Amino acid sequence: MIDCCIFDLDGVIVDTAKYHYLAWKRLATSLGFDFTEHDNERLKGVSRVESLKIILSIGKTELAPAAFELALKNKNDWYLDYINKIGAEEILPGVSEFLAGVRARGIKTTLGSASKNARLILERIGLVDQFDAIVDGNSVTNAKPDPEVFLTAARAVNVAPERCVVFEDAAAGVEAALNAHMKCVGIGSADVLGKAHILMPGFAGVDIDTVLKRLP
Image (cartoon, rainbow, N blue to C red; front, top):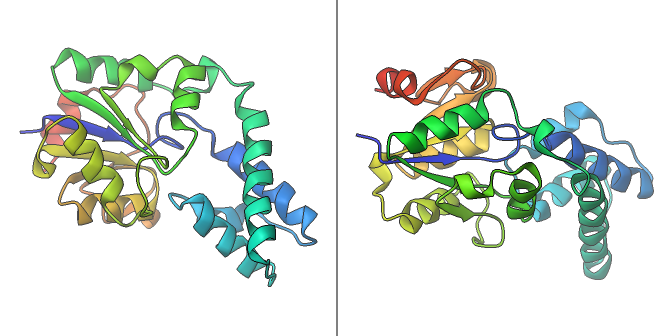
């Protein structure tokens, strides 16, 4: 029995990953090296601090603590410039209908995201009222694959972990769901998300009953 659906944000609910990439690329350029879309795959599901550490390793660059903090601020400011212009058109196909179906079944919906801007994004796209709880990078300290974000999301709606299913598009997120002893639906390809219990290309044409029947 599933009593709670926990959703990642970027790449699951909305495609803001491209704006993260543009902001990180701009930062890398300002530091004197290139940052490619292939490099960006390493950042999926990873916190902002850990992402910057990865980028600096790619550029073989070190920053003093103050410069490191300034780089984080610059990246976030640039990212916010992008997402403050987004709207409901950024919602991925089928997501709104899927969420409505979950809630109609009386199943709780929560967000479990590393993003510190999750609530702002949900407000911009008009989905903030579709979640019973929002757990983001402001609420937790440990990055995925640590299960903290998902366990916190489950506690927020008083549902046991084994009665939750997580929807994730990143390998670190799938690992976090499994570490939390939750079911996991991978949104994407098997080569990245092969450890998920089931895989879906997206939410278009899919309802919660179909997902629940496929879960082990």
